[in-house]
Amino acid sequence: MIPACSSFIWLSWHYYSEDRKQALTNLIYGNPQLKPEKAETFEVSGTYKFDNGQLDVTYHRTNYRDLIQSESVQQVFRNGTPVCNSGRTRIPGGLPIVFSCYDQFNVGKAVINGVEVVLNYQIFDWWRLFSSYEYLSTKDRATGLRLLNRAADHTMRVQSLFNYHDKLLFSINMISQWDLYGQNTARQNVYVDHFNMDIKLDYFLTKQLNLFAGIDNLTDRKPADGFSSRLQALDPGARFFYAGAAIRF
Image (cartoon, rainbow, N blue to C red; front, top):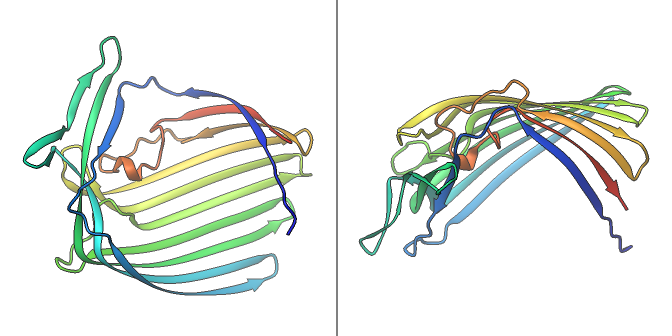
């Protein structure tokens, strides 16, 4: 074993494509009545290697007892007294703030099944592709209903990396999600979809110094009303420009 230590400095500049209209604050309250959740997981996976690439397939199943679930509520009560109220307020001289209260409780029994397929492929010397597809099924075994605010039924990720002589590195990252079961602002349970694309360019002056610039949420897509803030695909939910330098030493 050889001890090693590395450090780097990240200097960056950021710009939003739109002014932020309000601040969002999530207040998650612990519940003294919660039981610790228990889980048993079974997983099997396989790998197929071929010229310039690799394919991985994984199946997993987790059985939960007393699964801890968190949901947005209008009020949180403790000992009969409201300790949190969802709503809007304003700091004097500041932006309006929207408070969302989250309470936690146990689900008796739940099961999560999933399949993930991952492809890693070197198309050319200068172009590498990563892609994955995941299917996820989440259920409360007592009611047969889906678990809220967990994950999308279907998630597709694609990353393309373009490398020019180890000096320029350009990356494109895309994620598409279908049938995410969440709560909208009216606390209705809804199914929502989402798509996001990010791009980034790195220029390596030396092995220790590189410049970078990028755009997150290139298409300026707004998250659908129903994405829980804890599952938020975008932070912030707007086009986001940044640039900077990284120094390693």
